Every structure is written in C-alpha cells, then in structure tokens.
Image 1 (cartoon, helix red, strand yellow):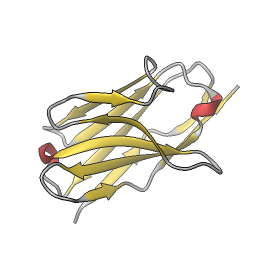
Image 2 (cartoon, one colour):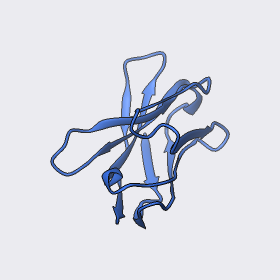
Image 3 (cartoon, rainbow, N blue to C red):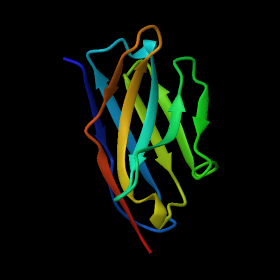
Length: 117
C-alpha cells in the first residue's frame, strides 16, 4: 500500500521554528522527487520546496532562506525545517511524491501549521 504520512505540524509563535517530516511506504523512495506543498484557507495549493532523487532542491521565493528541505533515502523520509516562521506561513502542509520514471504521484493527508503573532 502506497502511503505518505506527514507529522510535525502544530502551533508556533511568529519567529519560531517547526520541522515537518513525511514518511513514505510502498514506493521505491529513491525513484521519486519529493515535495512539500501548502494550502492556506481560501487559497490554492502552492509549491513550497522540492528535492529530486539526486538531492537538488528548489524553493518558493517566499520561503527561500527560511525553509530547508532534506531527504533520507535509507529511512524513506523527507523533512522540511521551517525557521523564522511568519503568520502567512499558516497552512496545511502536504507531502507529495512524483515518480521520476513514470507519470505517478502520491499525496499525503496533510499536517496543519499555525503561526500566530
């Protein structure tokens, strides 16, 4: 069974930090580009950060310098370290896996991050 399970969301004061984690099962993790996306209330889902199977990363301009995506292919996990959080970072954060060699994608169920000022 293919599954992505996010964890680490919560309530944090502006300026604080959180680390999200996504555990994958049922896929050959190293064959997938992994990404974090977020959806704020009333807004469309947007890309936050991605990391390819070779470790290359890309970030949304709004999080550059504050967020860091990483992956551990041995543990089938992808993390998102979020520092200097702002109220506008409040959203449900989703993990997504995109197969490199096939048109296949998998989404997690999401984890809520709430940043208060």
